[in-house]
Image (cartoon, rainbow over all chains, first blue to last red; front, side, top):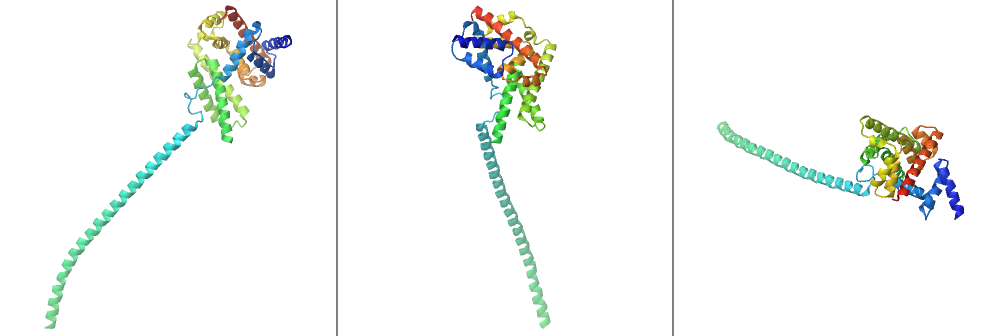
Length: 141
Length: 167
């Protein structure tokens, strides 16, 4: 392929002079990616191979977690939110039940108190019966 | 779908920022810091930057300035002497440190002067147009071509020497 290699050499010269456009540079990359090249162009093969791997270089995901969108993370957070909110709900329910029981106890105590006071009241009122009896017996006589 | 596109765009810009920062600062940790810092600043101003293109150009300019500032303060404290020496013997000694051919090319590129290095990265790795490069590095297109040409020739010479040694 003397025609092609001549064209490539011309492109390389223009590349070194920074006169090639992006599509010509793409053409060079493709050329050097595939097959054997003239040993005088070994440097170019290395250079283009490197520039392509350099483009692949990535900021690794483990070190910068906030930037990567990871479904496993989303799923994990959703699960945590569900579990904690359910827990809080259950805890609240439990708490409510306890409060209700407490209120019931307090009301019962209050009623008991009223009942004992009432009983005291009725026993003292029952003395009035004697009073009425004696009054009526006096009046009738 | 719109959100997914947005996330993908941001992700791509982030990777680009990282690669440029890594090229200029060499260290992975410092490049990471630079990327985060710049992304936060871009995020804060994202309402003013309506077009994705302008966001990208803005981010690139920011990361360049950030890295240059870092390098300046390092040079002031004499920490980056190693990277300010640009002689060829340094490239040769680097050849013996390099694990393989590709990491050797990397060492040569990293030993380029800062301006050439940045321009080479933007053009030959990121595939930026000369207009985009001009906006980021704030230089005339002719000056950019001169720097790019020097960088490419310099890499070629170093690689040819190494090829002669037969690595």
